[in-house]
Length: 354
Image (cartoon, rainbow, N blue to C red):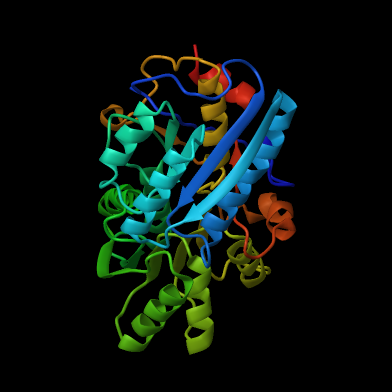
């Protein structure tokens, strides 16, 4: 299992194309040269996506132990669907063996997917789910992230407590499923949402929104945020406001180190860390390499069968109540890094392939 130094827990995840019209043109047995193209909606300014790309590169390097020489190329659309489509067209025309796509949106790429599959390319959709039954989706269990956070918030705050909800990017599949989890947990715990916002996975916007909330006079007890809780801390520090009674979630080194400092003597700010591992990209690559070997997926492995989706279950979470157990991990991380891990080829083969 590949993991960050000091990370003691490992996870699963995967992906590859299904229902293709032809066989992939990559190596047919163990090992060989493989051309890999990674397509991402954004990288710069997004700690998750930075680590996502790094994990793919590291997994490509690790594939040498299995006899593979993986050449890697990265393409970033900066949230522009037209750019994304053109970049994917180019990768198909240039004959890449595996294409990993962390898409701009959950729809709009069907003709390109068909072209890739007709060309025998292993087209793998990763992280943000794409609404198609033609490919395999590999994504984190986003519903769990929201549900776990809202549930713990309710345990800390009690029924009837008021919270503000700062979601991620409207229309993005990962955000949609994560919000379903948040809303289910909020309802079960009897919390009252007094304001809903979106930070669009933008750190500057996240801090700005929280600053506006603090200056608005809205009364609330806790802050639910769809990752990026370190930006909420920055807003509180800039305004000089007293801490909320709950904050979650995030999984960055910065946030974990901040929480250790704030709560060093006693619990001053209850919080939760839940891992949303960008190593899903590394797992996706290893799925693709196994598919190039001609291996077949097991039956009935999908968490969302209508989209051929397999969900990575979060394996690392903790709160202010047991933070000392994770101190070594948190202190060893760079502030801008996030908790990450991926499955090796052997682990994926055993869990998902016949």
